[in-house]
Image 1 (tube, rainbow, N blue to C red):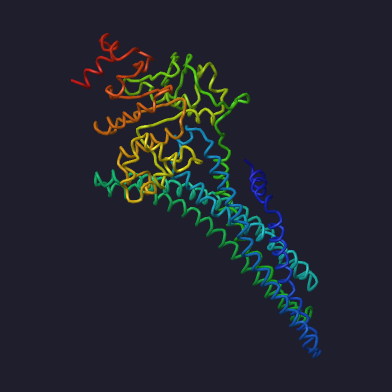
Image 2 (cartoon, rainbow, N blue to C red; image 1 turned 120 degrees about the horizontal axis):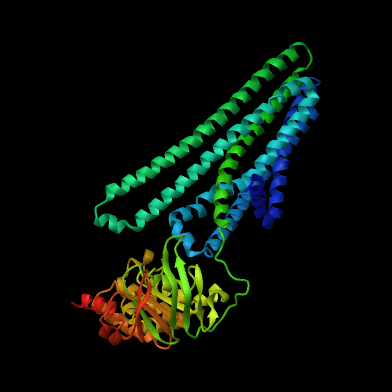
Length: 574
């Protein structure tokens, strides 16, 4: 996207706050006017009031200047307080927008991007963008107004001297443009490295138990040090660009002071200007240099904020999960589930499923077994459209799932996986996640069906027990029961159990199996399992390999055939 495109997009976020933005800009404008008044009064005092002993006029001007400073104080408070409020609100809108957009992105996006890097885009990258939203227009406006106002007043004092001074502007602007882009490149590199550090940190903290188990603190430190080194190099590049930028600009400003001192001194020496004009001229040069320095700070802020906004736009420009124009919400997902010539691959890799034809009768419990890599979990992920097909179609009750809105499709499907994810919060909040409007009684009833109620009641805080990050304060069996309670509360028509009990011990698995059997009643159920003991009571068992469905039938039928299922079964129970 071109720079002008980024600017238009950036300024679109001011629209909801155009009143506050206009007030902030007006206040900044009035501050500039107040600053321009002081040298004018100083010139009059030195040239007229003091030499002519006009005490009354002198006191009136002093009083007027005091009033102006009081007004300026109020304006500065408005700009500082409400200007930052404006920046925070815009930042909040951006964070709300990017977080909401992330909820619509396909699973494949999160397969390719680390969670710590995405967190950095939401939090770190938008911090300087908020500063730019507040200070950017304000600093730019004040700088331009102050420079323009100083130029006009200086021209009234001495035009040739003013033209000499303002001859510095073109080379300064040229130097700014040349060095500013390098500074922006450095800030962009820095942000990328910060996101990598955040990703590494998030990954390391999530795996802290594994690190301690293997006593791999040194290895983790080395990885983190490597990321810090990359960040240091990127930041050094940015600081070198900043050093060249500020060094060059400050040298030009110092040179300008020198030229003013020599030129104005010669003009005063030759009687071409008087003492008041000489003093006023120096004051206005200060007023001119001050906004130049402010403009330099704006350039740094602009490049830093722009780099964060560009990374924000990269996420926002990622397409959401596609929805067909003719897709309609449905409330009934009853009927057979059919895979018709279905093919699928992950991100251009080899086919995981190739021309698969399969029918799962409505209301039946179907088990998927077979060697790893056969596509069992992938098949389950395709039904709720976590991924889109490369070929063929899937139908439920004769209706192509692509003609069903993703939201209504997923609301009708319940999934219990081996890796249960619990949100930071209480047990009640995690069960109620399936239905945010559920009452405490409904949550308790779901926990009873999942054989979890008695366990929860024995806890000190009961349903208000804090589960810790990702449920670390609960056992594996307790987390699985909460996941099952969620599904009871959701009450879906289609149930997918993806290795739901494989990580549990036999006793816990047996206890949970009773809850799962109750959960499956009256629902079309797909069970993925490596433990064949959990699928013997399925209506039909499908042996899935990388070439498709190798065998299908009941437990007894498959054992009697002596094929792959029989081989797997005999290996497990040898």
